[in-house]
Length: 100
Image (tube, rainbow, N blue to C red):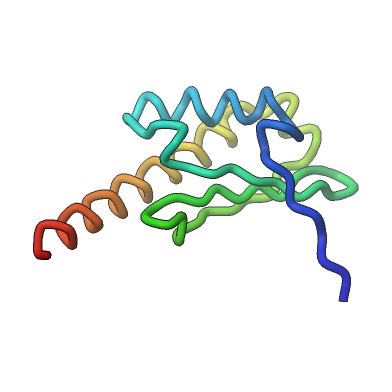
């Protein structure tokens, strides 16, 4: 079984990383709160964003090359989904920490 190589999104697609980063900042999610990775496919990128304590949570979505270049709305929706999930995980982590 061959394993595909994951790259940091900011290396493989700096413009897409910047779009996601910019959108997440609107929801007070700092770039250090996430790890964005991507696997190159023939027709696009499989993007995975890790977040939460120890980066143990993730959201993933495939974007065609065409979507990366022209479909900013789908990237914004993906970033919004990440922001919402990140917010929920941060709140849960905060309450876990307060119980200690």
